[in-house]
Image (cartoon, rainbow over all chains, first blue to last red; front, side, top):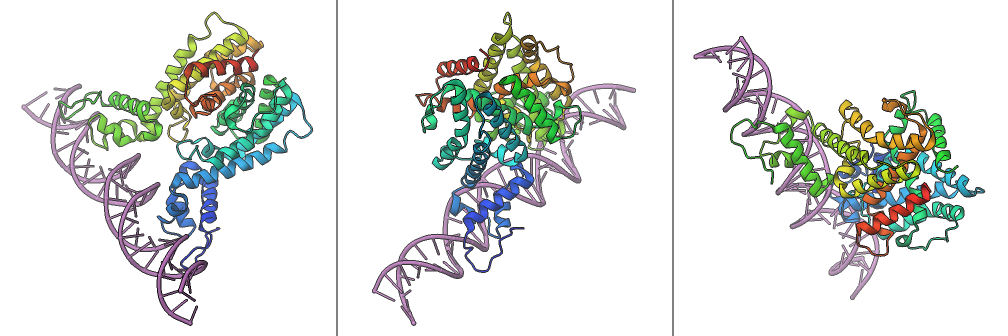
Length: 204
Length: 204
DNA sequence: CTTTTTGTCTATACACTGTTTAGATTGCGT
DNA sequence: ACGCAATCTAAACAGTGTATAGACAAAAAG
């Protein structure tokens, strides 16, 4: 699939082809299954080719992470519509966890600070944009002013909103939420119900 | 340091020497700096030697993770002494985050489910034992019965206690807590104060 | 329409990695 | 003292990410 065929010596759009290839590999085999050479093979290109476009493997994975944060941001943006207070916070956290569970590979990559370039400006901006709905909800519930655009000056109460979501998402992707359920199977619906219970305990 | 010298062909206690070597490497260079061959070199032994004792690299790292959970459990055990309700929960979470920040390498390893054998019985037992203080605190605050010894049947309200701690710890180890502070430096004391604010917002 | 220049990509090589295999060496139980 | 089992070595294998030098093609310059 998507194995971009070569009609000429030059590829044409290798950069985005490599990003797509990386995303497919990560979706199919997880971050641990990803390999720069694998991505190059999938794009039909030599092992050394990606270096010129991304500098290093971390450069390519940073782009994948950026796009993943954008995807998460999109899902979060529509989650709290028409909701206020703790209800908004609950809805956003639920979406956050669902995103992690449904996109395990990408979510794991976002946490692998050793594989991506955390100081990349585009990435930082994407992270900030993705978290905005949570910041707004935290502001709405707790009388917190709208946070400054710089990610440097976040409020403790925003962190209080992010931390449970982040923690729950990690527990979910590591299979520890599924382990708490009676059946060993990963019943998504039952997992959602469990998350809902947890959220109601945190934000009544 | 600790470079166990060889007096004879046989090592004597290679198994624990390898575990110590691994712990030192992880403490000094992080999980990403760890290498099975490095550990073997540090123990003064050939690259193939660890295999016989641990089966694979994951086997060795599983032991390191188990011991790390035991260390975390010890710190948690003494943290909630004499405290009740939300105060106990806050104290435990604070210790959890401090442990993650002061032992970044080990903490990162604990979350790397691709590097360790999650189904290992000793590891699972250590995880359960480490979480017991949190379970007790959650039971105390919310009128929840003492959880069953099987980690399989945890209560949603225990998860509600673990999730923020886990999330905060991750944010701290990835340097995102430090990023929220005015100074870019990692001032541990100021970080603790920030965590305290967050905890007071979560459990007043 | 040629020529030069610039950006892409290949080929090869290097130093590493975890793991496997077959064999050397040692300590222990009998 | 002897054989057996445990332990470790040596060498090799298939991979990895990346650096270097050169081949190729497209765009810019004449």
